[in-house]
Amino acid sequence: MDKRDLERYSRQILFKPIGLEGQERLRRGRVAVVGMGALGSVLANHMVRAGIGFLRLIDRDFVEESNLQRQMLYDESDARQHLPKAVAAAAKLSAIDSSVTLDAVVDDLHAFNAEQYLGDVDLILDGTDNFHTRYLINDVSVKHRIPWIYGGAVGARGMFAVFQPPETPCYRCLFPHIPGGRGETCDTVGVIGPIIHLIASCQAAEALKLLTGAVRERNPQLEQFDLWHHEHVQIDISAGKHENCPACGQGIYAFLEQSDQHEDAYTTLCGRDTVQIAPAQPRSLDLEELSKRLAAIGRVERNPFLLRFTVDPYTLVIFPDGRVLVQGTQEIAVAKTLHAKYVGS
Image: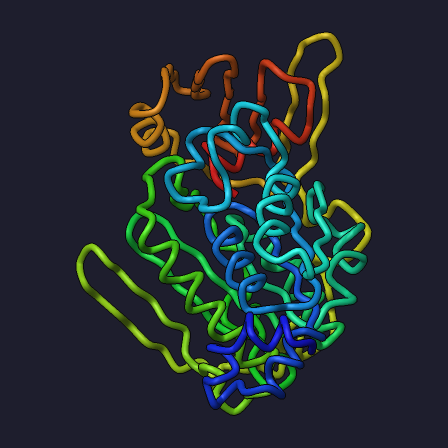
């Protein structure tokens, strides 16, 4: 490191568990952040300010005004321009530290590109908001022995955990199957900024440990927080490894397979300005519960067979088996974003 770096990171170098050697390891480190929303923007900010050498930012979405309450890297100008989050974040982060190599990827992470985007880094940070992507990250992690740090937050609740196979259980050891039903999302029940910063900061602290070689300090817990009701739960997952786990036990990477067996199908309906989303496996949706959640956000109409949810200029027609028609667009990326935001993933 040169004199400028020594001055810039002097306070972090003074922290003995990191020191000069740890700072040099950070400068050589390569990290990917998957999802540049609330968690991802905080994570990326921490990584750049800590002096990471290479940071890949992966996100398919664009900045909207509703993001600004909690997604710290974006501003009103980004929202007015509808800039891709990865691009807007890279611009902000480059202004913070121009010596960090930033790779902005405007794309959806899926089975066909996951190894390309994640296979050449030292650590993967989870800023996503859907289960399928986490199982995909886990497959890459296990197959290539790349650690990753899970995080999630909604409302005032959040959790995080460190997965470093084969030394630790993998995500699929703890959660063998994608949970059924419709989980809550930030766009249906809301979220407060402090829980985002708490969870992302815990993830970032664990990242610093792994990247500087302090593996023995790795947190063995799945930690859960509820800031509104001042609750904190720690669950020791160190003994949670399963020999029959499809991923780390049997080497079966189902979510990386080059097929649509585990992925929803997206089809643009010709001449209808509509994208159909068909789940890979039938899902049972509680339309009554979903209608209650969505009623506070837009116009809801329901009959015994479907639910229509309108938030101008789009309408989502939702069926009990999980099929959704997104009306008002022919762009699959837009339909994916709306589906994840209002129905859940």
